Length: 595
Image 1 (cartoon, rainbow, N blue to C red):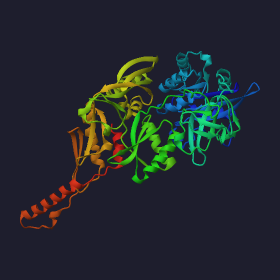
Image 2: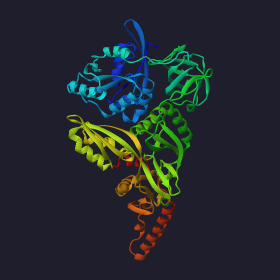
Image 3: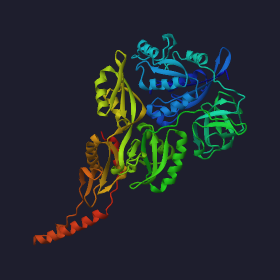
Image 4: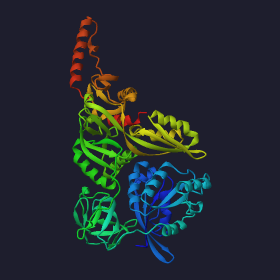
């Protein structure tokens, strides 16, 4: 055990985590030259296209230090705020962390957030200053920032260029010297924490774990603590770039287990693996349950593919433990699922991965957040969907989730960012200057206000310099109303939204104008109305397509023409009563683009 080191790399998005991981893999000769490529741990096409890490990846390296062989287990983590749950799982299975900071950009919001997460788990922090070869690098300034943040000496900060490999070799020595070996009792009953899992169509579920106590051998009878299911360890091994089978995995090490599990629901990330006899007495206190921030409905494009979508989501949840779903039905779209995401980027990535990896095309409804509704009978309801709202007469008051937003930016954009936050109903909690030209702003804001386009607008007003991080602080009372969109007098439940009273009129007006352009013309007039309860606040009309019924009348009395027009009018009226309006998928997407 004293020769094992478990560590992760934490940083803000695009500060060079994956590139640094490449250099460490090269220095330890973990991969052959043929297997080596840029960002080798980002194995998803989507990760390479967008230049972001979406999933954390574990890999084992071997390193010779003073003639002794050490096993280094590295877990690479994402940097975007929407994937912070992946980071929390990696941190729970490590004893140390490499904190990477970009010398050209300095400390960013997500860096601070991930650092606090690591300190809460008592991880040993090794500070690294990356990109020192860039012309815009401010080595001394950013080194001082790091020293202020974690209270270390300037000599402790490793100055490296992950791209060229300059200054990287001493990091491996620091990992061996500074990060403590895992603690645990090899003779105690087996206790292993599942920190990730993937679904393989040929082998079933593959669970990744870290052993806290005991030892696991191939062929052992094991059980999963929370689900209580018993299995046999058909294959166990360690994680190199590919799975490498072993006969035994010792205490403190990281590995995988294949036990022929076919059903995705039997494996829970955060569960404990133990022997059936002797079993451990209690589960490892894993990481907290994931709390989805944004909810949206997902429906199959073809209604007959509902069961296929259910099977796909079940398998997908194994690859992405922060994704949650439950069945629901909609009047407009039929049967589907109510899904929970950590943010809008997460929603976009899930939709794209379902299409690429499972060839599943889905319709996604307007995203919204979860509200607490207090009724006049004294009950409390969690409402994720506007259609689940009780009647206005039964509502005592509604509470919406609030967040504490932490924004770090150049001082030049101070005013523009403050205006953006105030427009989104934000309240300034505190501000302080990290350096002479970098300011940190803390705001209390409703979560619903940052779900739509806040991140994009923040990048626009700060010319890409501001970084943003947030965490939920609780619920507060809010003046919310349910805005319904009526098409031909029928409410389209998939387009309903809960919105603040002050913004309802503007939003309803924009929705009607947008839908007028998107809904195709029919044989009858289609009124598009925005309504709050029984009160109509905006209206647009999609004009009907008309045939010229008077074309055959030439000359003669006007009553002949009038008779034909009256006959047409009656037909249009009948048609309108029985006509249905189809809403194209582009209409749902357009609502997201409303600004």
